[in-house]
Length: 471
Image 1 (cartoon, rainbow, N blue to C red):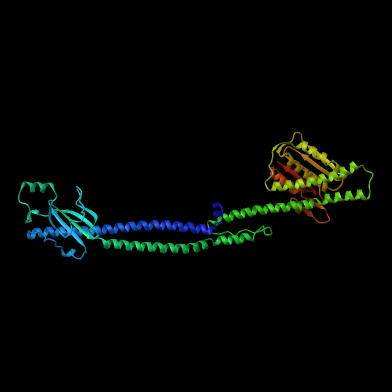
Image 2 (image 1 turned 135 degrees about the vertical axis):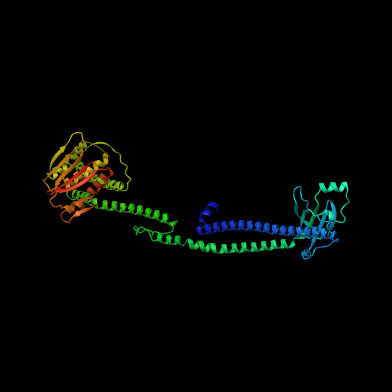
C-alpha cells in the first residue's frame, strides 16, 4: 500500500493521539533530562562545597596547632571531625617541602591550582579503585613557628618569596554522592516511565471525549437528505466547529435553493406545456380523423408554430431559472426600444386580429436604453403578450414608449388591488373559472427587470391594468 493512502485512512483520533503522545514524550523527556543535569550539578557542587569546608577546617587546625605548640601534626594523624568520613587522604606541603600526609597519598593524582587560583578540584582514584574527589587548597600559616622550618638562609628566603606558603591536599570518598545521584536518576526514570504510561492510557480517552462532538455532527449530517432539504445543523459554542457548521449550513442553503429552482423549473414546464401539448395533440387528431383540404405545408406550419411556442416557453423558464440563480451574464449595450417595440407589434399582429383588439400606439423617436437586448425583448414581450391575452375581446390596448418609460395598458374588469399585489407570483390564478392568471410571464418579467436594474410596476386604475417599465 502506498504510504500516502495509508496516511489518508488513518483515523483522526489515532493521529491526534499519536501527535499528543509524541509531543508530551518530547517535552517530558527534555524536561527530565534538564532536571537530571541540574540535580547532578547541584549535588556535585554541594559535595565540592563540603570538601572545601573540610579542607579549610583542616588548614585552620594545622595553623592553630602550629602556633600553639610549635609542633606539626603527628605523622598519619587524622582529625576527629574527619574520622567518620570513610576513606580519606590528605597531605600538606609547605614551601615545596613535605610536611605531613596520610597513608598511600603518593599513589593519588592530586590537582594543582594554576597561577592566580587558590584551589583546584579533580576526580581521582586510589589503588583499591575507590572513586575520590580531591581538592588542592593554598593557605598561609605562620611558618616561623614551625620547629622544623629551615634556618635563616638565602635559599629559604628566596623560596619564601617565590612560592606560596602551604598547599593542602584532601581527597574524600565520593561513592555516597554517586549513589545519591544514581538513586535520583532511578527515581526520575521511574517517574518518566510512569508518566508515559499514564499519558498513553489517558490520551486516547481524552481525545475520544474531545472528538465526541464530531460524532454527533456526523449523526446530524446523516439525517439530512433530499427529503429534508430545509434541515440545518445546530450551532455550537465550540470555537473550532462553529465555522465548519456555518459553512456547511451555507452549502445546504445553496443546495436547497438549487433544488427549489429545479423543482420550480420542472413544475413550470409541466404547467406551461400542458396547453400547447393539448393543442398539438388536438390538431393532429382532428387532421387524422377529419382530413381537411388544407395543404400539407400549411398544416405543418401550424404544428411548427405550436412547437415554436413550446420552445419559447422552455427557453423562458430556463432563462428565469438562470437569472434567479445569478448564472445569466448580462451584455448591456444601447438598445433601440422603439425598433424593438415595432418588432413586437409585428410578432403579435395575428393575435390582435384574432381577438379584434384595438391598439393605440405612442412611440417617441430615437428611444435608446442601455440594456441586454435579449432580456429586454423577453421583458417587453411578456408584458405585451399578457395584455393581448387577458384583455377582453374587442377592447382597446394603449402602448406608450418614451425615453424614460415603456408601458402597456389593457382593460381588466375582473382584477382588484389585492390581485395586482399577487400578479408577480409564479402561476398565480384568479379563481378556477375566470381564467385570469399571469402564468410565468410577469414572474419572468420581474426577474428580468431586476437583473437589468429596471423597475417593473403594476397599477390598476379605473379597471385598467397598466404594466410599466422605467429606467
